[in-house]
Image 1 (spheres, rainbow, N blue to C red):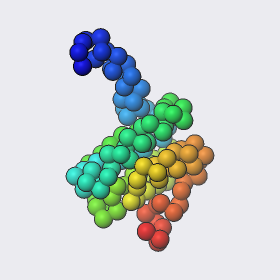
Image 2: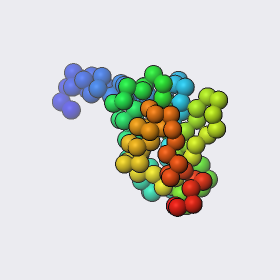
Image 3: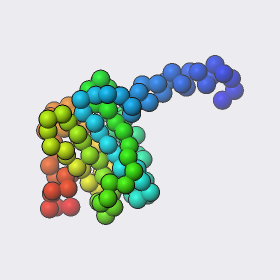
Length: 123
């Protein structure tokens, strides 16, 4: 960075991404970002959710946040999705490609991706 103007430009570019992480949408995507989650690859998962939700135009409906330890370290990275009036969905052993699919099928399409959930026996 060489100037205040350049810093302001970066701030404007990042404003939507920060807002999506702190918004008040009907759907909350919560990524476990404790030490175990981060070491298992949660940071790219969080970033992918933020980017894909923004790209899909879901920022007014979906909030992407992070939390500490969810308590199931052996399944990290873990993502929980909370929707008003519905049971929580817990996705495990996540990666960026799985996050993209979840945005498309679950957040856009309304149908959880069962094969990535904690209840799936094929993990």
